[in-house]
Image 1 (cartoon, rainbow, N blue to C red):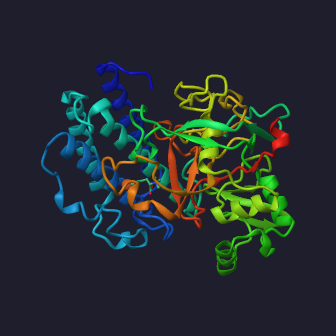
Image 2 (image 1 turned 30 degrees about the vertical axis):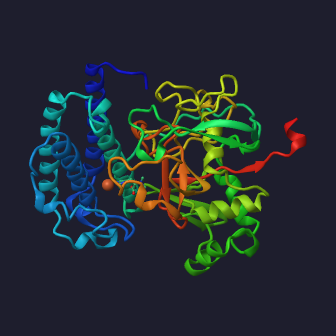
Image 3 (image 1 turned 90 degrees about the vertical axis):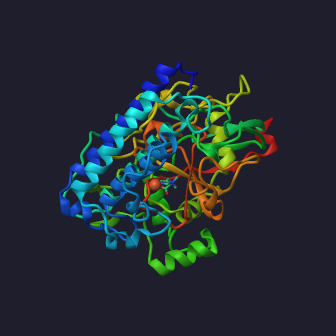
Length: 440
Ligand code: AVJ
Ligand code: FE
């Protein structure tokens, strides 16, 4: 954002750390001890693992690396190392019990706030502009989203509730928007808390294309299902087809057909699938098949970012679709204020320069692109954040969901996951090439 003076920067770092901790508290205090230590799905860690892992990462980066202090609990580093233990095995580890884990994260945080008070936030890359503090706030928020996924998978009555997002979708919108061809600036070299995979800023030449004005809705997705989408081989890649056969998939995760209508389970509540909301809990394979059925394709990652950031008047790339100002509740559905996406076409104030809606917040959007480094990429500060995942196994998702906090979301932010994943808050929009006649 705009360059902050040292005191404002310190205040901002403290605020984002506190916001993350409030959310962590909400997610870990609304269920009992059994629910914290149980494994609600083999896809996820016990909630109490995420809790202590949040504290352990904070200890490693802010207490040890920035503060230069000795380890508080060196013996637990390996228990909370995500690479040593797959999620399915984490319940068998000697985890800190809920009360111990709470005490540990609070102890780390108190020491970190002291360190923040006395660290000069300039001079070395890790502390410059409070980078490591911003990185750790983003890390905690990413695990808060992971814990929210665990809550969604959890059986039993609702533990979390939230009001629905406002419906600001009034008025007819065009189905698609033309994004003119030409160069644009992708990635960033100036966003202080951008993570390594978002860097550096570089030029890309993108041919003209059309992109959906809004994410694909449940109603549209239900047409795909009703039209035999899951039974016709021709819409699917070979891997996608094999995957849906092997697992017997015929609808998004959490959907169920009953009495001639689609129901879904959403945070402990079963409800009719709302046709106007963006579709949620689909894999890359499903998104890709839908797009082919619709006679379209997924956007590439660079197309998505150009649609989100390119201002055709100035030729520059914005921080967010609406401009450079940080998100407010009028711009986007972020931060777990709501537990669902807003109806397609909502958030007119969050539209891009070209009129594309809901690029930020609501649902993560699958792109057709593999997760790869940008030209000039350098690991910072550790290879296990991004570098070890680069390659064809992972597909890029963009834009964030209702479960993403603003600190971990911007026009350049990149997420990635396996193409089979659908417990994540994933949806998509579609695109197509623009023909020469449509461009002139
Ligand atoms: C960027 C969301 C894929 O949760 O696996 C958390 C973020 N990295 N701890 C993940 C992350 C290390 C990461 N994603
Ligand atoms: Fe982590």
